Length: 125
Image (cartoon, rainbow, N blue to C red; front, top):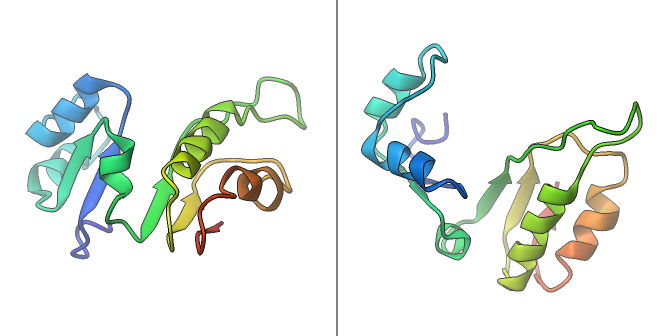
């Protein structure tokens, strides 16, 4: 949606095969409409390099799994926390980060803000 609206979209993945597929416009998913959207994308790229991806970004979406593996009141935030820790190590300035994952109440304003403590002017939602 953002790419179709004219924004440059850079995805980050730890799997080099997924990065290559996105950059080569290959779709290995049966999700309806995905192959067509990927084939027509002009402003979409992917990388394994987080620093490269966020360098010029104003808005950063974090989409990672937060599995419920401990009962009704527990989500595993370890992958999300690792990404925020890595973003903090880049000392981002004046960015907005959107967590697009299920988190426990208080995570964003507690743990999330703490993990981004070295990123002045950067907000989190």
